[in-house]
Length: 259
Image (cartoon, rainbow, N blue to C red):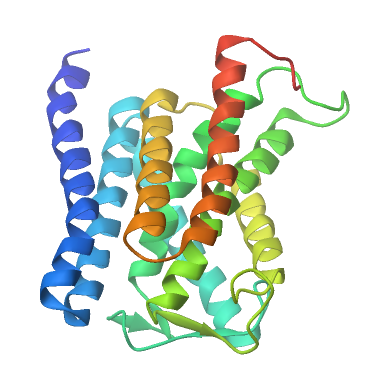
């Protein structure tokens, strides 16, 4: 308990810095122009990833935190490297030079973007899927991995149109979802499902990770709708991530029995 009390302040500080960075990004972009966008986005991603890592450390211990950081980062890079070089599983896309540094054509920032929201998606799944699942023969781990994949992919309803609009990556053939191919979302579901099947831990600091998920949802909804000129993705992401949050909330309060 003593360690938890000591870590409360650092977690609060890091989350506050992350939120302030996100709020400041459109302001700095407006004041300084395009040159400020990549540094501000990088700062926001790293701050959120640091907050998630600190929350893991606080709630699950050093070993679990290190395990998940050291697994998610290389696996996320590998998935993105495969996707950007072969088109599998997301479809044909490539990163521009906007985000640096890069390894194998993949910005090193991208795996940290996976780290900053995959564990919060695991928290959504852990709250939704408890001891029972929709099908009696479906193991709890597989059910949780499936819900986590949906929660993680719901974020991409915001993310992909935004990053394309900012020129961070481009699609070989623009698709039906605000220029994003629909196969991209199937790729997100598949990749995050497989990672979650093997590495979703049984012990999670659920409440704090859900807070990160909820803050991401609110900031993205407001940002895309009012500052970045992307009202369509803002509405879709609001409904997608918001639906996952509502599902988790209802399960927590036992107002419904979806599983």
